Length: 242
Image (cartoon, rainbow, N blue to C red; front, top):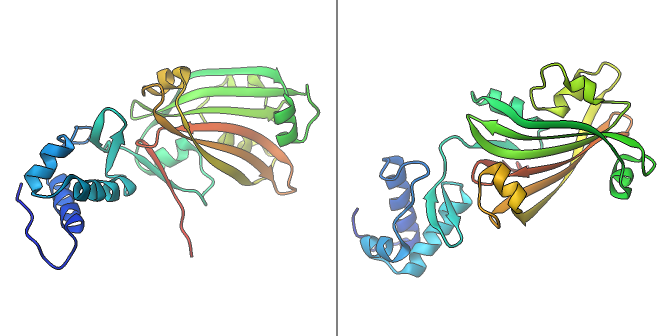
């Protein structure tokens, strides 16, 4: 690792380029922890403030993951990326990227619609809904915990008794009486509860991304409401703006 020499660009930009080169050369492997900031800054011959700016840029690009109280790590090699404008299941996305997505701990049951679910799905409170929960593993690593609520008329627990590949969206699309059109989602950041941390193999309090999503047919009728919890370092969303 070479000490940076001044040029016309800010030192943080030079540090960024140096770190990108080291990552590309495999100086640190996916999932490996980087040296402490003080040590890394000394190796590069820059201040910790300059180093933090370079690390911030790397984190925004998804090249590294910074965990509060634990350190900085190289992002895992197998990470899913999806544009928010694309309506696609985790299973379909993984297959498109040459990865295997498998559901784990699938639970399908009939529950009564709470006032919140009734409002989202435009049904009466207490109406029967099929609840489907599962953890999605991609190449053996948990990337998401998904919880769907579908009016019983569109999906029943019996519909999942035949091999369920993990996607309620794909099941609804296969229903010839339904014409799925679009989904509207809200994105939130929240800390992992102990239950979610255990399912997703992260630490309690680690940041998760939550997509609260409602699926609609061509007539604007809600077909499904879901809570989708993603591990940011294993699943990255982006938006294409034109």
